[in-house]
Length: 379
Image (cartoon, rainbow, N blue to C red; front, side):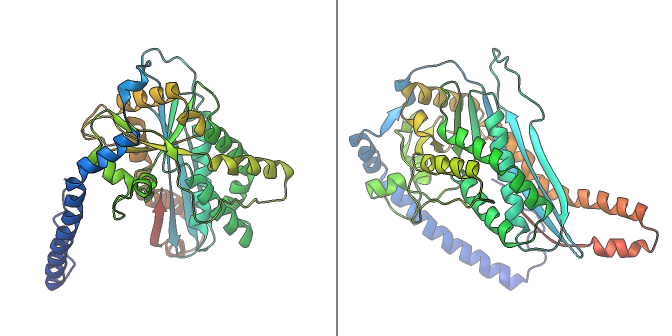
């Protein structure tokens, strides 16, 4: 359990804390009731999976050699200053526990980063998030490993990029906006490679920790107040997985706005959008100490038992440590990028010091203009 800081309630009125604690107990009662509902129906749900031939054991697909793996994750932060916004984003690729036979060259650097001041704009966070997605997708496409894990859903890059391009087209050009547009074609190329996963010696898969999708729940009429991952964490035993099923279709058709009327970009978009519709998802619980993993993948992986066997073997090997509730390379990448937001004040102070060195007048004006009011960050 996470430790609660001793000063958590130091600034809150005593009566407010007492009321919140009492309501937390009531919330616990309601959560336990829904939890017990799944516990009581566990056998029935397992039987449904077995009757529909969805529930499988990883030993059924064979024992391939241990594959090499890599995890990619990114983060962004925008610090709101008096005179400007201080925007930054970064993406890192971390190698997993590597078998001794791995000898392939991995091109350096294994990270991407952008830091730049921008004028005050409420859309800066959306645009910098799009730049972050470009970095993640590029790193993932270039990694030479047998399996490349991405954090989040395989549909997330399309959603974030569409939002970012819309914001860029609505506002004046900025440095981060120009960076987004300049690398847009490379993003589409890399994204297409990931969505197709046509190379038989490489697998790109995505593993969202948080999800609201219920492909199996809707198919089997499970309780709607829990998503598939939550239910399957209770249902699945060690080494069990579900056969891949098609990803849930959105209410609105997939769409991606282009930054310009370029024939090459239009061609790439027309190839990417159909690939999004052919994604599959399976759930796998490699060990008793891990939750059920939601794994999104291309149809070329989902329809090939040999590639599924490599995927499951890689996941099992990278989740061998109790206490780490995700594959080791994703865990390490996540830990690294989480620190970006907390590091922004240090970057700002370095910039402030440099401005003070260059300024010939009252440096108090510099400190006022670089005063931070609030920060926005995300992954």
